[in-house]
Structures are given as C-alpha cells and as structure tokens.
Length: 409
Image 1 (cartoon, rainbow, N blue to C red):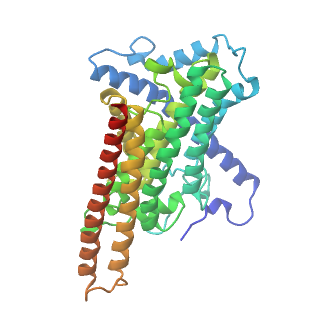
Image 2: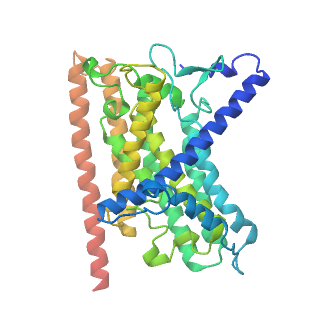
Image 3: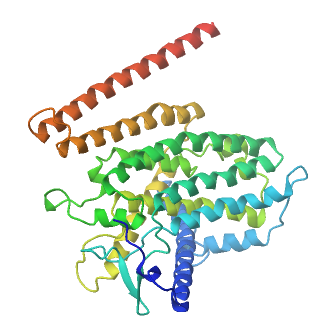
C-alpha cells in the first residue's frame, strides 16, 4: 500500500512549501558534498592500491583538492569548436547533470520504518518523509532518468563536430541499450516482492524481519542474490565506469565524448559522472539493502537510520572505486556479449523462476499435495531449462565463430 507524504495531505500552507524548499536545498547540498568527497575518496583509495600518495597538498589529507580543481576549471577558457553545433554543444552537459539530481530526489535518506511509520519524521512541528519526493512511480522515474542521462553524452559527442567524440557517443548509445534491458529485468524481481513502485514502500517492505527472525528482509536475500549482481554490473555499465568505460577510452578516443570540452562545461561532465556514481550507489542501497532501515542500538532513534544509510552507501562507493583500481577495460565485443548473451537471459530466467516459486508457495501450482514439492519441481525445472538454453546459446556462438573463420580462410 503506497503511503503519501503527510506534508502533502490536505491543504498545503506556505510553511509546507517552505519545508519542501528546505528539503530540496538539503538534498542538493548533501549530494554536492558527497560528490566532492567521492572525488577525493576515489583518488586516495586508488593511490593506496597502487602504492602512491594521492592528493596531499590542498588542505588536510588533500581534502580540498576537489575544490581547488573546480576553481581552476572555472577560470579556464571556454572553447566552442568551429564545426560544433553551438546550442546542443552548450546544452549537453546539463542533460547529463540534471537527471542525476532528479533521481536522488526519490531516495529515502532516513526516517523510522518500524511498525507503520513509513519513514515519517517531524521537522519544525510538521510530519514529512526524509526524502525530497516519493512519487507512486518512483522506480519508473529512476529508469527514465537513467535513460535520459545518456542523451547528454550522445549529444555532446554528436555536436562536437569531431570524429573521436562521435565514436564515444555511438558507443554510449549501444551500451545503454544493451544494459538498460538487464537493469530493468533485474529490477522486476525486486518489484515482484515489494509490490510497489514507490521507493519508500520498497524500503518499508525490507524493514520487516527476514528468515527465522535473524536475517534481514532485504531484497538482496529474498531475491536470491542474482538480481543484485546483475543490477550492480548493469549499473556500472550505465555509469560508464571501469571496466565499462569504453565511452571515454582515453587510449583510443583521446577522451571520448568530452574531448572538445573545456572549462566549466567539462567540469559539469566530471561532476555528473561522480554524481551518478553516488546516486546509483544510493539506488542499490534502497532496492537491495533496505535503505535507511536498520536496528536502533542506543541513543536517539532518529540518528540510526541516517547512519545505516550512510554506512551502506559508503560500502558501494568503495566497491565502485575497487572496480576502477583492479579491473581491466573490456573489449567492445566482450561488452556486447556480456549484456546480450549473459545478463539479459539470466535476469529473465531468474525472474520467471522467482515468479514460479511465488505461485508454488501460494499453493496455486497444485502439482503435488504440498507447496514444498511444487517449489522443488519449479527449481529443478528451471535448472534444466537454464542448462538447455545455455547449451543452445553456446552452440550457436561456436557455430557462428567457425563460420567466420572459414570465410576468412
């Protein structure tokens, strides 16, 4: 059952509008501070993994290095190539930046999800949700913004009037089509158990007790880990981060889609990349790890949800940095093969398996006399069908490879 923000129920006063604007400012400030921290954190962690020092001059431990880089880019000369489309060239950075903020607006950052609270907090004497907005189709908004964000990359590459940015734009369009399907199919498994498109409701469902009253009721566990792994891989590809950063690929394309950009517009692309990383980590935490839901150990209960959210967010930010420091870039054929031949079929099969298990547990399959036997039949049947499908795909790939080799000879 979808729960509305209590602030928006009934008549809306000027104080309610002021509180919404306050939440918007808080969300924006938090996201900007998180991006600045993420840039510094990535440079420091990668430096440690490569036995280097990393930023250490601007401020204590180099904390102000990101601010110094931003000021430097702000005062650099802004160039527009002679053959570029001026309007689209100037518009593209904003099309990359704005969707990241709009996506973060639907993420619950805190609030009590125990009982029937649904994350409601009291600010300035008014009850509201600890998130900027909670539309009933929040997950559809997330998918829409992830699709729109790539338009900035595509238009930046096309409008530059240069072949290297254009190649990066072509790669971006193919990459987002390939991995958006896997992202959506893995997300379908979460929606199957949550029964709602609202991010607040998805967190509320995960706040209950899980198996045996010991394990949490996180979708990470309930959906059997596979959708989580697929979403993490597809999300990394959507972010154009290593090992899926073929859109930039500085060894091949100089800098990819933003080769012709300088000054503040280049900084906006740089900002959008790290803002999307923070946003994607927050989405993963919300969908699979219960968001801010967690136990209250001691002290004020309103602080613990925020603490749990930040702790889970930090884990995934570190994971993305770890990927960057350790994994080599995929070849383009490997990128396409992983998306179309592995992730999409696996996500679809797993969704069908979870649906079959749900039907069997409800006693609606009615093959044997008990639901446990029906669940076992569904699992065994899925394993047989999956193995057969994998064998057919492998056989088709081997046959096609041999045909190409025969033509080359």
